[in-house]
Image (cartoon, rainbow, N blue to C red; front, side, top):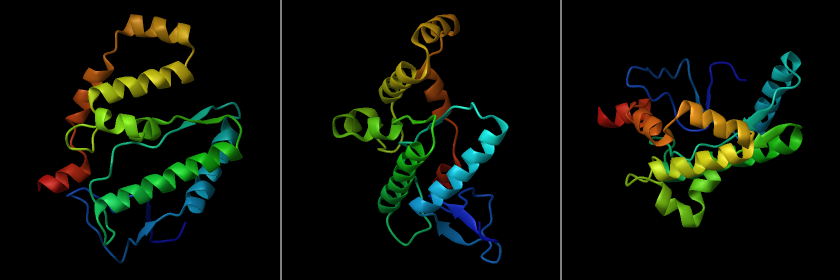
Length: 177
């Protein structure tokens, strides 16, 4: 990692309270190969501690809301999601026992995109969250244990997501300022 460099795949520090000092930080979007290199190094360190760890990767379908690039945020969003998705594919091929959960892919596949996003076309609606989480539990948990756990916990994923959606992220705080 370069010194004095804030490495990012999306945008510069977005908090209204954060200060950007060009003498301390340099904006830099990582390439696919850099993301793969750094992620595999992290995996190797984690596995030194716990060789049996199981890792599940995912790319968030929630779009970025701001960019430091001199281009439209939609272009930056497509670029960073593509970088992360390609890197996830390389990482899962490079190391055993790393799985990819396709939350980004499920939400953005043509038939689902219009059904899974909210009106702001950035956040995922409760139906999209439910469908995506069902797919996750179907493929990444033991179904019998998962069904019992859901009955015992009575977790309402949509309600949890709605509560979480009320949390204002740094990017939204900037936009409303």
